[in-house]
Length: 288
Image (tube, rainbow, N blue to C red; front, top):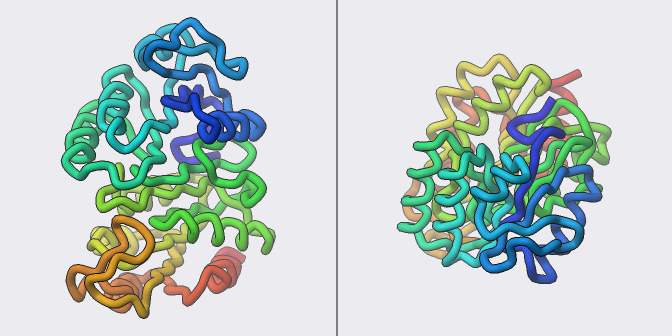
């Protein structure tokens, strides 16, 4: 079982015509992902690395049955790509680009929600359902099939914790890097609800950081959860007003500090970890 991304996903890659994107597509295919289309205006009718190319997402949906998208456009093209995906009937789309203009993100996410499309990112490594499918650039060797959900705001934390869990013999149902920009396609509490509702996920690890207040919307979900939730919030020593790492990691108020978030999550019933290693230890204890 997997959350949103499973072995049946038929993926269209958008803007993946450069060296980086093409390498990612190769890795996704080697991981078992069904990549059915490459979308790049002006290249329709070509074959790019054995994948048929289309000028539009709508053509990829109609001709190749695409239902999932990985977007590799530059930040300035993310809005149009997401809107095109939503209007074409794509159900799940991930965006790699960082620093997508905020107003572009607002517009694109509004259209995505209107059409029922889940968005991973912007500024995301993507997601992986080990043994089923990979969307983006999470190293497939870091993951293994299992029953633990991983939700990360930080790409590095998502990779590190997933790898540590796997090395400890703890597999994952799905691991998702929800995105590091100021706004994410879906908020942590929505992802948490999806994982908690998955019958093949026994516990959830949430990996947060400084900046924003999205964790506070998770509190009621955690309090009502019938499955264990382990939370790690990094940046305990980050100074206010200084961006740490990427666009969303910026303390703007006291409630956006790691200390405040950790306290709130613990009060709601999450087990708060001190490090990625501690996440694995706590998950093992809670799922024995």
